Length: 113
Image 1 (tube, rainbow, N blue to C red):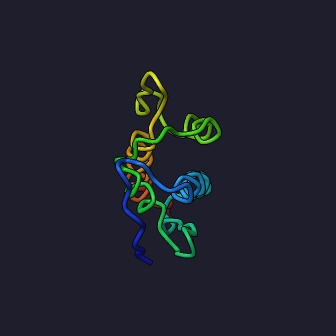
Image 2 (image 1 turned 90 degrees about the horizontal axis):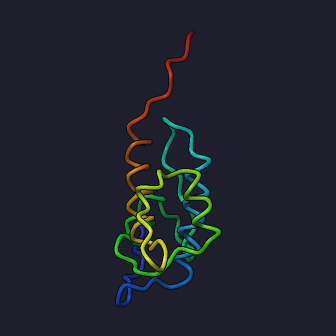
């Protein structure tokens, strides 16, 4: 399932990685603890959401309002650390990657026979 996503260009990501980030946030919202990590389609490649978040780890592009609204429902405000011009994908990606790691550690409750 690992995929090769393109590198950033001087801190900027192509628009399809921005779109993949939004898809990954949406997939995270639907992810049930204890199940396999969701994946999204990135330019025809099935890619785990944590990989998408990691790729945007150093992206200096600003997160659009639609994505920021979804993030605010998931991430503590202090994690986003908005600057003067807004929240970057790097800040959002680091916060979402942290949430992914926490979710991966969660277990489903034991099912009674």
